[in-house]
Length: 453
Image (tube, rainbow, N blue to C red; front, side, top):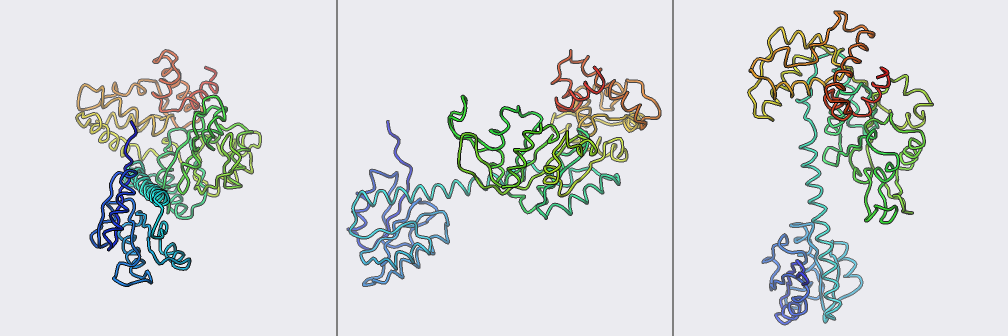
């Protein structure tokens, strides 16, 4: 059974015969028709279309009354479609009406088919406008709910404060930003903070983990595809660049991109347009790009690893985030922050740290950085048997450690041990071991290869 269209129309005319004729012509094709002799009785927010007579005053022929009410109705609700109608039409009057925001113009007497088509098209325009307003509202709400306010960023260490100061200066510029740092140092959190501080804060913030995108799906994921472009392309799909249009696109793990895909990304950034897979029409984009990688800066500078022309495109501003072992003065505050967070999340008592446990945690090397600390606190909050946490609530502290934990060789040894223990604890399951360490699967694979495990 065909569903009745949900189009709402108000017909405003001082002639009762015109009102009745319009109601009879439209009632079978729209969801609701309300007739009124005077425009002040109409609330434009309650209708998709207002069919408005241009000459409401007795004897008027110049259409000024209708143009005045057109502007009033559109001021009250910019999304409503106003279709003007008159028996005294002219091209000049029609052009002026369109300039003032009229959706269309109907001459009396009308042909019913023409009237129905005009009103239906105007209703589609109004509903499209309202959908756009709703989408914009959702984007703003999403930005507010997913962007970490600056108060959630714990930083007192000079190296971290310097990075935040650089981000604050770069945020209003709209320049592309490259975030450098080991896995777990908070690059994703700071990307959101950068978006929050920018002029695009009320626009979309879209994240893509390039380390998790298969090469075969790279173009479809980022640039979109047309229906039928490949076997599973059952409908058109906009890519992440189009989804982020007007806002910010965060490409994490950009150092994982193979050279031929780096070239495709460079082309998009140079032209500021994408061509969907299976399409032939370019789509213009306006995106602020933030990228991140855990590759060391010297490694990133090697042409064999990363195209230098692409590097110049993405690192207009370059921000290096320090590992947690280089900001030990932040560890106590981070612990307190996550203890409060996970007590609320899991409805557990707020756990306490004794001075001896705090000292042990501050001395630990944290190869997984802030992400490892976060997971460690969540685990301890859930599994601890007492309000006061002990060393036993942090399994990584059980491993023997040298007093010289800042020495590179010692840190490598600690990292290897942490990886070995995680793999053993999870029966070799890469996904679970990576989650326990606070790493991505790609980052864990690199560490396994690095240590020959």
